[in-house]
Length: 190
Ligand SMILES: CC(C)(COP(=O)(O)OP(=O)(O)OC[C@H]1O[C@@H](n2cnc3c(N)ncnc32)[C@H](O)[C@@H]1OP(=O)(O)O)[C@@H](O)C(=O)NCCC(=O)NCCS
Image (tube, rainbow, N blue to C red):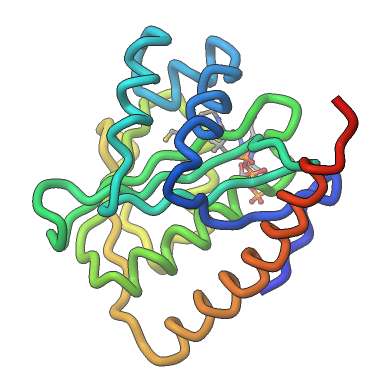
């Protein structure tokens, strides 16, 4: 699954142990993006504790440019480890917004939700967030989204061998590029 992304960026899943990258990305968001991402004003400490709790029930897709995380989509189960409900949240740093990154992240998140048997996906979206609403509309075959409320309900279709294969192929590409990312960071002069 190859997508055209700005600045030669790539999307891959974050590994366990990359919570620091996620925290640093969220802390870099400008004030308005931080507010819309969390549905209100949150402190740096709240962001730190939020990222520290991303565990096995969480899948985070990251958008990387030159090894730096510039966008993320978090899929987090609500309740028990195999609960069929999850919530999704998206963040793209301001210079990379409106360039198609959110669309790719939402597509990957819906595929991951589908393959994990998630039946209901909630999205925190404040009512004046036109861009997120426009983004959700692009996937309205998979989404039912109530723009009047703060929570959008998504009903991803069930997984199929093809949908599992699509995620597997996307991960294979992501892992290869992730290894290159680590190498480029190792060889980058400090
Ligand atoms: C919402 C967000 C994730 C969208 O990601 P993005 O990379 O900017 O989105 P895309 O470039 O893929 O654009 C999505 C759609 O919004 C439209 N759009 C872009 N800018 C817009 C704007 N200012 N107003 C309305 N629609 C806009 C695009 O045209 C596109 O639709 P199209 O492909 O049909 O033309 C990103 O802007 C962001 O992180 N915002 C701050 C945090 C946030 O609001 N998170 C969502 C709550 S969980």
